[in-house]
Image 1: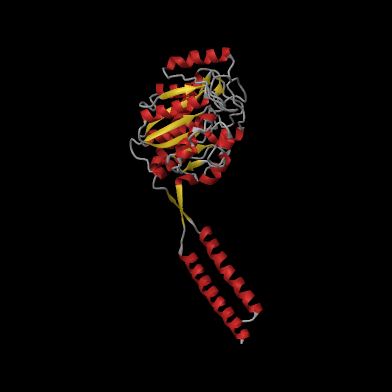
Image 2 (image 1 turned 30 degrees about the horizontal axis):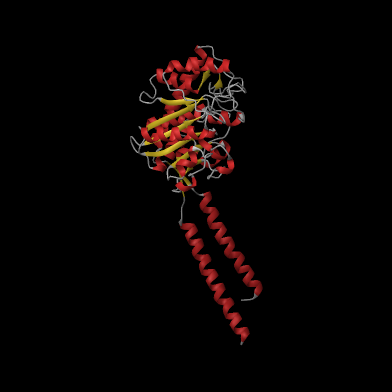
Length: 367
């Protein structure tokens, strides 16, 4: 085989390999997820929850933000004294898609959660819709939960001093949603979670209302003591914890200093646990995400929604919310492996022939 013929031969093999893979990807088929029914039920419950909250705001003359282009009632003001900063309106609008509940179901099932399994949840006020979707998914699967929430959140989150996420949860409870769930504790939130974010007048105004709901308010000024208190509380309530869910970028979840985190800052969605407890010992800045990951417990981290949506089959910043059961998150892709197997086989045979022919030529030239 001449040098020119060998070059053409390699090119043909490359075309066969690339072509077989491309055809396989282009001819993939969608089939309903085996969890489709649970996904639909969770998303339907989430949609119902959103409608209850919107109705409550309308009935009580609580302003719906002009930025809430989808008119969900789940978008807050651009700024308030309970705002921790850093929020993007596109991400907040995206989060109001009740189909996120289907993604939570997918994650819960991938972890292997079953009836009455134990899940701890840490919610900021940044994405109230994602908080509610997580609760609806957990309730659909009859999971036992520990709920820790915070008052503050980033721009356009539930940062209205008259109506925040704790208010939303109470409204849903009054309407008989999540009858066996409660907020175990709530706190100021934000970067230090110690109440320094609020002006006293706003803080008193907010707490006087929230205290009537019967949920425990916790304000611990020392960060390490705060983290350890929550670890102990979760351990006592959920001795067989299977999963930790973090929504938002509150310090208690992600950690106090980025350089102290053992997770990559790009890790989002479902993150598999690994048993490395020594990475926590002595580190006073670590957050709950890393604490649980390093003890082999899986974590769901809901942040960076544009990346997450592209990865998981949900629309980012849609003009309207897609119908339940229609987005790609509800479906699995299946591929016909016959074509790539044939392509790989032909490529292997061709490369073997090429190698033997080249070896033969080298041996002949040596003679």
